[in-house]
Amino acid sequence: MNITVFRIDDRLIHGQVITRWIGHAEAKRIVVIDDRVAADPTQQMLLKFAVPGGIAVDILSKEAAVQRFRDDTGSENTLVLVRNPLEAGALFSMGFPVCAVNVGNISNTSSSTERKKVLDYLYLEEQDIAALQRIREAGAAIDFRAVPTESPKTLDDIIARYNA
Image (tube, rainbow, N blue to C red; front, side, top):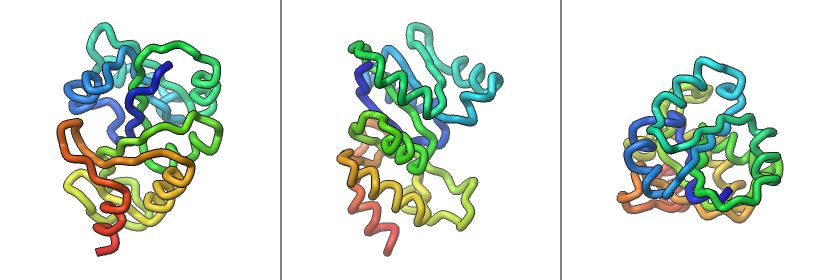
C-alpha cells in the first residue's frame, strides 16, 4: 500500500475525511488503526457505513497493521487514520513505516489532565506533545490542519502556542 495521508484524528472516519481527505489522498482504501475499534464489530460497522462506495475500508489493531504494511508491497493509495499521537508513536516504534503525519482534530475528551486548547480543533496535553516530538525524532514530517486547503502549521508552531 502507498500511504498518501497518515492522519491523527480522534473522530477517525467523519465528514471532513469523507468530503476532503479521501480526495486529497487520492485514496482507494482507508485503513483505521485502532485496537478498541478492531475489537468492536458494532463500531466497525458504523465506520464502514460512513464511507462512500468504491473505497475499501480495513480496521486493524496496531499489531495487525504493522504486519499488513510490512507484507503489502502494492501501490494502492491509502489514507491511514489513527486516534491520537500516543497511538501513532506506538505504531512507529513497533515498526510501522515512518511517513509524513497530518494532525487534525483532537478534542478535549478522554483527558486525564485537561487538555489545553491550541487551535479551534486541537486540544493537547503534555503526553501528546511528547509523543509528537518522538514521532518527529523518528523522521516523520508533521503538519497540523483540519482540511487539506488550510495553511499547515508546524510542530514548532503548535508547541509555541501550547506554551503561550
